[in-house]
Image (cartoon, rainbow, N blue to C red; front, side, top):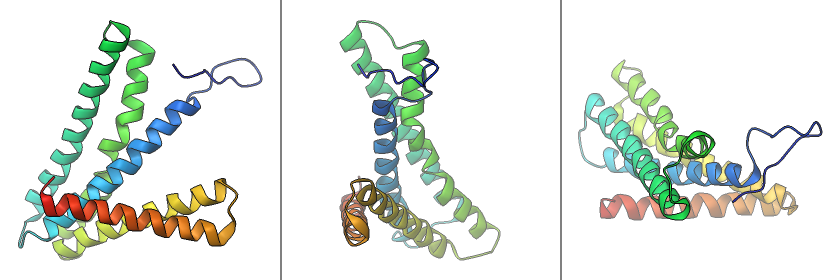
Amino acid sequence: MAERVTDTAGTPDAVDTATATAHLKERLYATITMISVVIGLAGTGHPDAAGAAATVGTAALGLWLAALVADQQAHRVTHGAIARGRDLRRMLFVSSPLLLSAVGPLLLIGASALGVMHLTTALYTAAGVNVATLFAWGCYSGIRMGGGTALALLAGAIDAAIGTAVAGVKAMTGH
């Protein structure tokens, strides 16, 4: 179990390091998954905004529910009890990026429905924003590791390339 982090007054911080790490992992996973979903939608030919929104929303909801079921199952096996209280709140917090990953694409799909841009443009823009997000997280990790600007940019480029490749494989295989 993760060690609780406390502030100088001795009260627990809202999020310990292990929880923050798990939350970020889910955020990165959700980002990569949403790239594959929107690229897959853009490549299907002529989806409409309502169908695209339903697909994005359903994908995010399905991922979130799968994570909750897996977390709850793992908790029951490990602890011999259903997660409640603090443990359940942690599960919900850690898995929340799986739902939040749909917000950007849904906003862009909504803009498309309002005639601001073509739906395919909205979907490719959503993918591009998510690739840029992976790049930014990679750069930030490079900076946090003390690698300097050049290594931070390299880490960002590698993370964006890997995320794009994984999303491409997922989109091509229909997963």
